[in-house]
Length: 130
Image 1 (cartoon, helix red, strand yellow):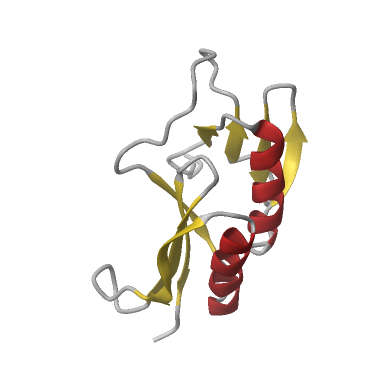
Image 2 (cartoon, one colour; image 1 turned 30 degrees about the vertical axis):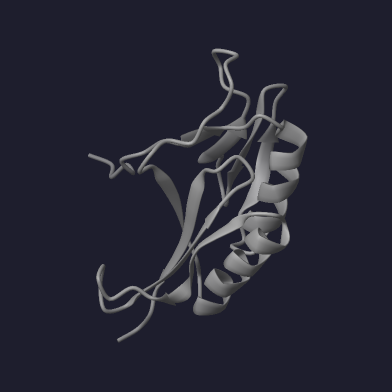
């Protein structure tokens, strides 16, 4: 049987799609993740297939961040984690945890956290060599 990732994709909502798209185009580019698909209702990002989507909520209601929910993106290096965090803040996001080792998760867990323009919590992680 072929090994499949547990998740096919993750979607988050926004109340200002053009602003959110500009934010994610810039921030995810620091991780070598690009917009691979644009639709009328949203955009899909990934490295080889759309795995992360941002767009208007399907029910037409206002988007709201979930309490305790966050999306974590894999980085290729410590420098990418740092660039991700810096770009998120530059684009108007809020700091939720500066780049650094998070030994409470694992000794080699290097990560940074931010909130996007709609309040969604995002993270970049790189597992440093030990």
